[in-house]
Length: 157
Image (cartoon, rainbow, N blue to C red; front, top):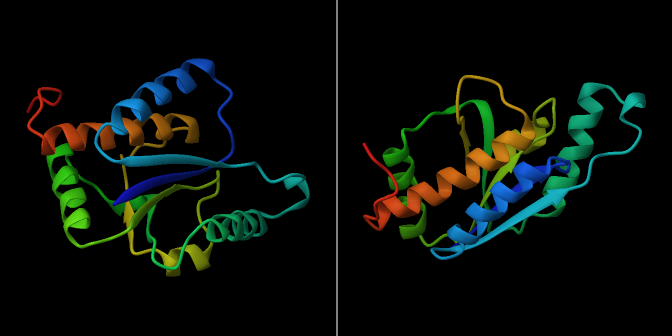
């Protein structure tokens, strides 16, 4: 199985970029992982929130294969403890999925079409974080999940 993290908009903070890169490298030790950034939409001031979500949704859908399993990172999604999340990933790997795609949407969330296409929603917290921070948290949690599955001493419960 491969894991892809799709994100809308770039990260300008060099410190976050460096930290994300560290966890990406660590994660690639366990699984093929790809972080794909969808550029920000131009001229958003002329768009309503719904129009922006629709345009972002179209760009996300263009990057999906028909066999991809789409999971949205959404504040109303299922919450996991880290060990539960590792078991969730193990189930996905055991099910024969080719590619599991997690998506971090834009500032207004996801289009209705993306919600309909998604096979699941995950919330990393009930709190709101910047999209840039969520990238780091998600990559770290993926790494943590694989260290749990391999019984490596990164996670302490």
